[in-house]
Amino acid sequence: MHTMSIQRKKIHPHKYSLWIAMGSITMMFIGFTSAYVVKRSQANWLAFELPHIFWLSTAVILLSSLTIHLALKQFKERNMQRYKQLITLTAVLGVVFAACQWIGFSQLKNSGLPLSGPVSASFIYVIVGVHMLHVLGGVVALLIMFARAYRTRIRTYSPVPIEVAATYWHFVDVLWIYLLIFLSIAR
Image (cartoon, rainbow, N blue to C red; front, side, top):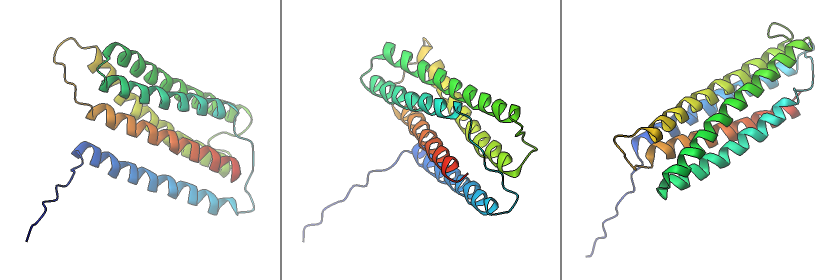
């Protein structure tokens, strides 16, 4: 009897760890949005418009998803000069996204909705703020990629670190789109 050996394709440990982390982060945000829905049914809920800059920040993070995708492609083609430009641009766009979120917080506060104000505003600060912290964590990873791209010694062409960073970056992008749609609909 002829037996075929089936070779399993193993996932890199860093990629596996990332998927576990993204699952945990997803569950946390499901908890946040579920709590939001429950609290929204209370009589003292105050509905309000989200700051318009949150929509601009969405365009910024979408553009950054494109730039990191192109950066990964350039890395795999070993076009290191173009990779450096694109990874730098992605990190800058991540910082711009966080700045837009911060401006949105300022707009909320200036319109009479401080963190300590109505519970609906507090939810926005917590949900958007925790997402912003995850984006900034991604920016740190991008800055590490940036530093590695510009160092002169020890060149490694393993795509795993940039693949992990890109996957995470796309994740926080999709997560933001979900949150923005959710917060826009579930006011």
